[in-house]
Length: 230
Ligand code: ADP
Image 1 (cartoon, helix red, strand yellow):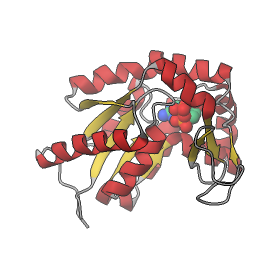
Image 2 (cartoon, rainbow, N blue to C red):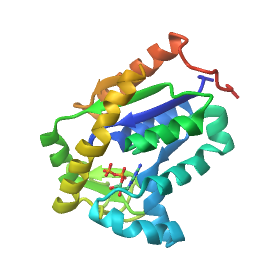
Image 3 (tube, protein in one colour):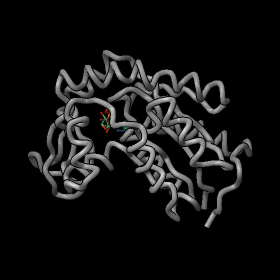
Image 4 (cartoon, protein in one colour):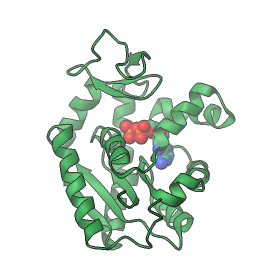
């Protein structure tokens, strides 16, 4: 079995993080931890966290750092992430979250921060056409819809446009990305963990690029400290 990995994927909304993180998770047998999916599930289940998060999600604003850090901390404390690692999707999104993540992982460290680079014109097109299964989160687009109507191919759930894929919320999210998340690229670069990956192309092409990067890093023996290979 391939060793685990501790990965984060950075990139603008619509850069393909969700699609690629699912694939990386299967390929490296590591849990996919998406803070957006966790928060949407909490809203749907109307938990205390979900009731607090709802307004932020709908407007495209960021959930306060301490709430997200606690949620991620609980998830990283579970056995599967301790033994195999993880691929984090949508987290960290602020320098404070990146600092918090380093504390949560210590003495272990992140292996790689993969930055999926896609021009803004293209992410705008992708977001406008994005459709998502309301039950399992599978991602479609108006160009590659489900096989039958709006029924999810994977789970039979309903495929919809996300509440925050409106023009106003997309603008808020992209502005917040530039302001709060883009500085993380320099942060991980300075830490020697950043790799930029071209996110333009088919999902398969982009995935192959990501695997090349992760494998060459792994074979360089740079993963610290070793994870259980279970
Ligand atoms: P996108 O990257 O397309 O905005 P996500 O599914 O990653 O989609 O996130 C959706 C929403 O969930 C964000 O707009 C924000 O409100 C909230 N969110 C997700 N992750 C975080 C995070 N790490 N910190 C704060 N808010 C978050």
